Amino acid sequence: MSDTFDGETAIVTGASRGIGSGIATKLAEQGASVVVNYRSSERQAESVVDEIEDRGGEAVAVQADVSDRDDVAAMVEATVDRFGSLDVMVNNAGMTTLGPAADIDVEDWRRVIEVDLTGVFIGCQAAGRQMQSQADGGAIVNVSSMMGEMGFHMRAPYCAAKAGVINLTRTLAVEWAEDDISVNALAPGFIQTDITDQTQDSAGYTDDDIRRRTPMARYGTVEEMANCVSFLARGDTYVTGEVLRADGGWTSDAWRYREDRA
Ligand code: NAP
Image (tube, protein in one colour):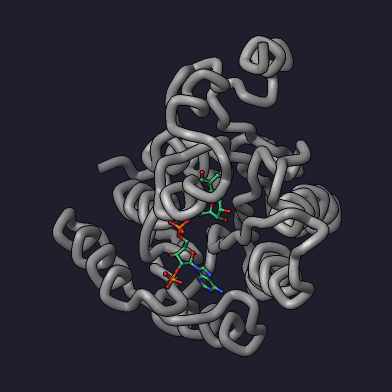
């Protein structure tokens, strides 16, 4: 067990499954007491807590909808009451909707923006206020997407929200640097989780298409994303306002795209 986060407390939103559960498990392995946030999947969140405890870590599951300010404020308050501080906030919870931009219902648009962008702002604001009151500040990591840096067919609200997360991250990094709060973003490529499984059929591409398009020729793993977040969350790097792309080379590669279409 590494001691990178010994004595620290972390909240990971959307940690009942997928990338969030991997991040929660990793930070706990590295010594943090972890709040495993979920919206509706209580059973899954409790099983993430069980797994962490089985490995000797400390965790608690807390229900909160990240798009609801009161829920998130209560979660931060409960965290500080129980563990004494909030040192790492990982705004990971997210959702998507798929469809041609011309046909997207504005309510579907609003829901994605509310969860994926406003939810990140609410999480940053609640955590930032708490960290400003602490002598040691803290670290915030926002999970964006490579789709926040490039357009992507059928995902207008998701791409808009994830792009917003990137520039929100930079802005908060600048605003809170003097409070000793780092704010960074992770921009994953395709990672095999429920979100990819659910969207794949209607998205018009296959697993093989993803492998052919990705320079590393495979999906990323939850473990790899957790390693990246762990790096961004540590307080000894002088890194803030950064967007770490973890996409197997996807956004660096313009050539393969033309090759695939030939
Ligand atoms: P996932 O497997 O679908 O898990 C989503 C998580 O978010 C669940 O724990 C879910 O909890 C939670 N959640 C959703 N809406 C919420 C809300 N309003 N309040 C609180 N929790 C909420 O997704 P994932 O693939 O792990 O994705 C995690 C993050 O990575 C997302 O921000 C996603 O956009 C981003 N990302 C994923 C990929 C990828 O390829 N998988 C690529 C780039 C970026 P409940 O089940 O309780 O609702």
